[in-house]
Length: 260
Image (cartoon, rainbow, N blue to C red):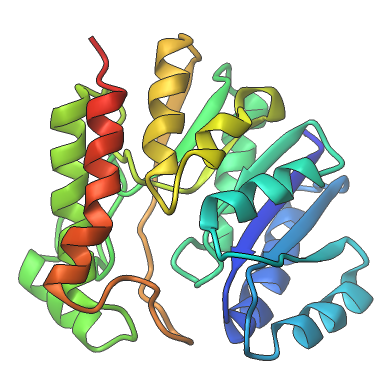
């Protein structure tokens, strides 16, 4: 099995970290992964994230806390984690509980035994499902909306994510089905800093995906069901106007990177 650094960019996700970090430890123990670290890159949390991570670090010994300063930035938080990683392979994912520890294990297993350079966890590949889906093939879009409405996630955010993803794939002519995944594993050498430095939010993944495709890097998408948020507040924009404004950089990225 590989030696891997797992990067968790965070902003006020203390309660979710209390669940996710121990779950990752348990899942990787099942497949006897011994050389791994969890790097939590905090973007100025105002909750008790730092204290929680200090306790987790004392418990497990392989948990690192990095406190960013300056302007908040998801892509730069991820880049900071990659720069401070100690192993040749890295993975990153959201820390809000939407990306399960069981999928972390599945991705590492698939990567270790497969022949692909990159694996992307995908909501839209076979076996995948967006927020609100409970069972593949049996949860209708109406059921999914109801499930999201009863969670701490945003229904408009969930719907916008699906619509934007389809639009971006069309604009980019991308073979990757989840072009806004944000859940990925691969060698550090493939994750060039330009993908992160030129982005303001999740559109970095559009630049990254397009770059990997253009470099003919072998990519696999592994389906997973994206979970609804249990604790904390969604970072997704709360109004249609905000969603549109946040979506503009994604569309710009897709047009710039359009794959011929």
